[in-house]
Amino acid sequence: MGKILTHAICVAFALMLAVGCSSNTCRDNVSAIPQASFYSSSTQSAISIDSLTVYGVGVPGDSAIMRNEQASQVHLPFRGGVESCQFVFHYEQQALSDERLNDTLTFNYTSIPMFTSVECGAMYFYEISAYSCTNHLIDSVSLVSASVSNVEAETLRIYFRTSSGSDDENAGGGDTTEGGVS
Image 1 (tube, rainbow, N blue to C red):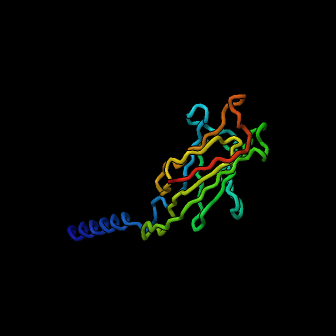
Image 2: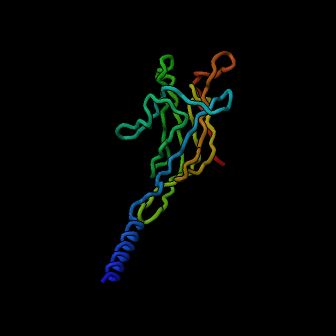
Image 3: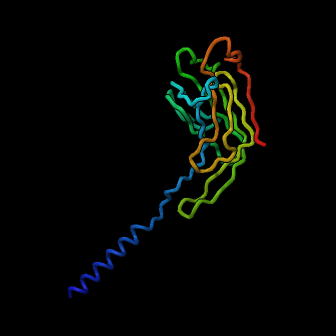
């Protein structure tokens, strides 16, 4: 009788382990979101921007990615099934909080549908073909990788003007910088 009970307990324990180890939930990262890191255009070193608001253009509802936050990077979600998107950078610091100083970053890209797994379904990867930005406080943008997948990695670098004075002739000029991928 003791052997049967011991055997039944072992079988029940083995079944609990098997059921506990198999999961039908998706734990993979199923978001391919470009990561933009911030740098100083004068020192080329990583920086943090204080009081920054970033939002998408033409997105239904509230498209704020961050509101009046300090950040050294931002994730800029692309929209699957479209070929371009835009993001506005609004500076909330008192001396800079003027919509005329907003910078707009525009991306052209190809959406690539990818099957992830049965549990996770499908997602989009992206291939950036071109980009442009206004140059009020953003000096320039550098593409680190044109391919955007679900791997957490720096996709682009945004270089901000961090000095003022005569050595920074284009500050606030509002010109546009463009970049392409060859």
